Length: 168
Image (cartoon, rainbow, N blue to C red; front, side, top):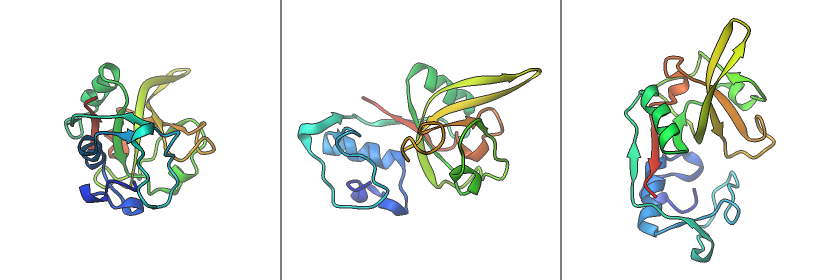
């Protein structure tokens, strides 16, 4: 957040993963989260090459709105960065279970996080498909920093509209 402004990101006012991946490529690296944690505020760039955790050579965008392609990428590539609409109060107050918010926009984005997997919750005769997402807000939010986002629900919250991963 502090270092990728020249690539189109705007700190606390927003940004996208592709711009961050491009910054990492040009910068030839990024710190580990342990050495440069998310602080929820803008600051001076403190990149330290000696604590570099990763590099990339570019990125791949998953076809827009395609939840099947998103699920294939999670299963075959690994964690996938996504942008979602997180403007509903229910998102900020999320604590457990499958997050199912029909009021979410599928065309506006306000937050990014990474999808690390997906599964299905079985409740008797009903089932709920969900993505497993790691948020950046720390372990006190959600389920130890994670949220289960509705899956296969008409691209709820726009989860498959802005999905990408770095080439490492």
